[in-house]
Image (tube, rainbow over all chains, first blue to last red; front, side):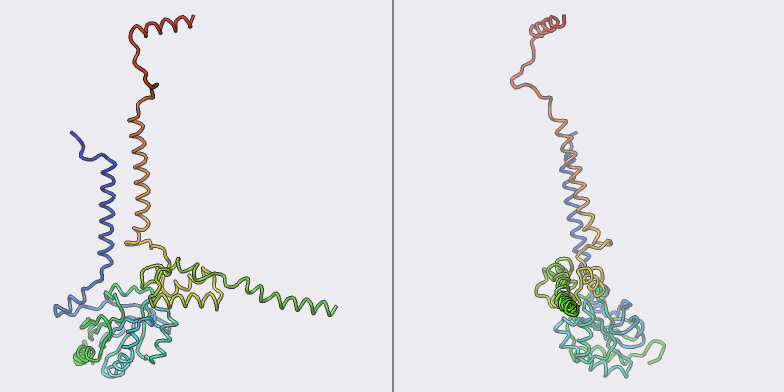
Amino acid sequence: MKRLLSPLPAAVVVGVAALLGLLAYGIASTEPDRGIESALAAGERERAPDLDLPRLGAEGRGTLSDYRGQVVVLNFWASWCEPCRDESPLLQDWHERIEPRGGTVLGIDLLDLDRDALEFIAEYRLSYPMLRDGPGDTREDFGVIAYPETFVIDREGRIAASRRGPVDEEFLRRTVLPLLREPAPGGAS
Amino acid sequence: MRRAAAALAALALLAAPGAALAQCPRTSLVDIEDEVFCPQCGVPLALATDAPQAKAQREFIRDLIEEDCASKQEVKDALVAQFGERVLAEPGDDGFDIAAWAVPAGALAAAAAGLALAFARWRRDDPAPQAPGAAPLTERDAARLDDDMARYDR
């Protein structure tokens, strides 16, 4: 019986197929995770991935679960991001408004130099808590691909809304205020 | 004696900035920017020309070189402290990054195997060398050749 392919061309075909498979896997694995948007579109609140990051400009580490029971406006930003500059005063304003009602803005400084980030915070007089993710590892957990991106997290640690791009007054009013009225887990507020 | 001491002191003063200049800068931005990544851009820093993060990263490196007289390794260490190991333009050793090591190694092994196979086939297919135009001996010629050879053996 005649062989379909001699060993050398067969090896080349297998090699090319393996390379194409690798390429497809590479592309698939770098696709941003859009699971959060899908859940929100279906009216569901997905549990927010926990974060464990060093504090920016302070000792120690912080986690998202430190803020359980509060409404958290989780904002991913960087000092080199121009739209982040535009929204920062609004976020500071909202932090001051929601803090007495059991809410907070939590900044995650991504892929940034800490000296630049600290200058940014001083320039805009930002007083809300900040964590630092220099390597940008948390991007994958939240599917962050551009800056700024903001996630509104309810008192039970679930993502209730997201904004890919700068937030505005209308978005924060629509998403944060209803969550502030929701009871805290266990009945405390 | 006093004059000699003053001359020596003056010489030392003149030599000091020269020695400092000879030691600093110890590296350059150009030397470093093709060996580190712009983490946000996903390309080596040298290729990320206009990205805002790349500009900030370049300024940081320039300050380390010019103000702190940092060596290339010190600059790299400072970048790793800021952005993690991935800032170095080297693939990691886990997940999909393994492909960056495994694919060239596999390609090299496949090329070696292919060459060995091709060489073995060439050896197998190549017939024993023959003089150009040589034809097989007839029975009569062969008998004559045997007689001649026998005569020489005597």
